[in-house]
Amino acid sequence: MKGVIPIIAIDLRNPKPIYEQIKDNVKRLIITGALKQDEKLPSVRELAQTTSINPNTIQKAYKDLESEGFIYSVTGRGNFVAPSPKKLDSKRVEALYNTLKATVSELSYLGVSESDIEKVVHNTILHSTPQGGKKND
Amino acid sequence: MKGVIPIIAIDLRNPKPIYEQIKDNVKRLIITGALKQDEKLPSVRELAQTTSINPNTIQKAYKDLESEGFIYSVTGRGNFVAPSPKKLDSKRVEALYNTLKATVSELSYLGVSESDIEKVVHNTILHSTPQGGKKND
DNA sequence: ATAAGTGTACTATATATACTAGTACACTTA
DNA sequence: TAAGTGTACTAGTATATATAGTACACTTAT
Image (cartoon, rainbow over all chains, first blue to last red; front, side, top):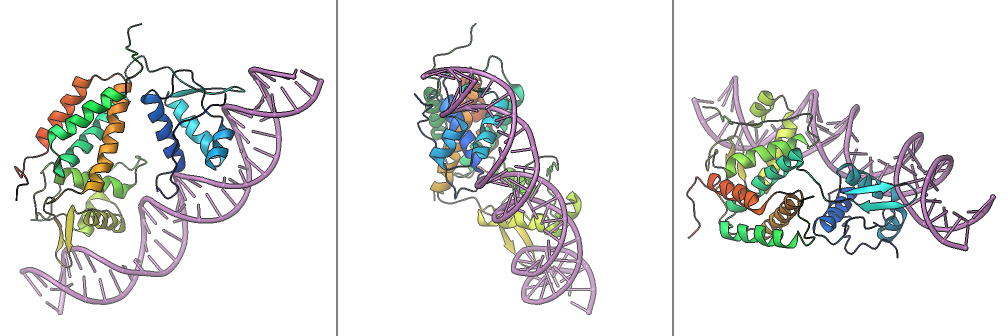
């Protein structure tokens, strides 16, 4: 079976770079557990064909994802989902906290209630750990 | 008194465009209440001087902020903080919810606990509504 | 050994965006 | 009148993004 990816939506009219959109999609699928550890991703050429995107653009996305620890590459075999991180990447967490603060601040400013925001947060966490993988090895 | 802005931090080594950094800074100051409604912002030329940024870049940031509803401009007088929004901008809220979900998902994936995330959310909301402005008109 | 599929590394080109630089004009305030 | 303000242009440069094409090493199956 080929490396079939469920939902990769690329919007060419979106000002966000294509390789960023690909990264976001793959990250989402990994984080939500739609793609399991060591599962094979579509090959660079295959995904390039199915999405009508240049192979170089796909490769850039994969390369970035590898350097960020989400996937790993094996020459001649393909790209695979990396195991979930063992220890906290404090720099990345710090950056995400800053994004979180800015987002919550603006939602609040726009009139969204705290309880509505907390509902979204709670539901998101419920849906993003279907692996059951707690770190105690 | 000139339009003095407390904290405008521009990092030229940051890959994020300068005008985006300016926008983020001004938005943060408005959202957190550091800048009050109808308060005057530094003039395009003044901020350009104090930050050593080209006036055109400042103007682009201000223009964007105006079209997003955060500030308003008066020719010959200056730029001022707009009143906080009266009704929900559902498109913007939807976009912020998507950002919120992606951020919370990744934090959870990286091993941050739900309670830690909720703490940050709660503290952020406490610090971002010093206006006391609830919408019930 | 061969062929197909894979990752990877190049060069080159085109386009869009970001930024700087300079000028000009209408408006407001003193 | 003068100074300060927003705004609208033109022009040029640098960088980022994306495409196109080629090449090579590796893995797997035949």
